[in-house]
Length: 149
Image (cartoon, rainbow, N blue to C red):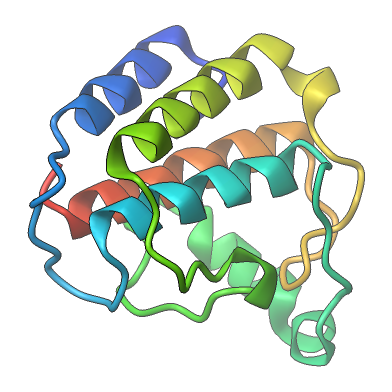
């Protein structure tokens, strides 16, 4: 499974980010490309422990089962629910958000396992650094595919 601790995977993700343009057309969902970039950076802040959200009731019941499914080989499904702290509703400057996300990908990779949060994911619960790195790749892959990158 690809993850954000692998240099080749990080290079792949950054190259795909570079393919995005302000007018990249979304294939599903509601976010603009700039909002998607900001959303992905917010997720990286969550993974680094700069943001956290309390466990959801439904996550406590089903999160561990869903985590296994999401961390499997299949891509993340379209239109999955989003944690409220990761919702981006205002418009953002595309170029700034693109740079910000590239920097977060580099930072996450460089900080390695020690840089991952110890907070549980609001839905999936406890996650190891390797699970955060795999989930990070899958989350970015999902949203890059959303905009054809």
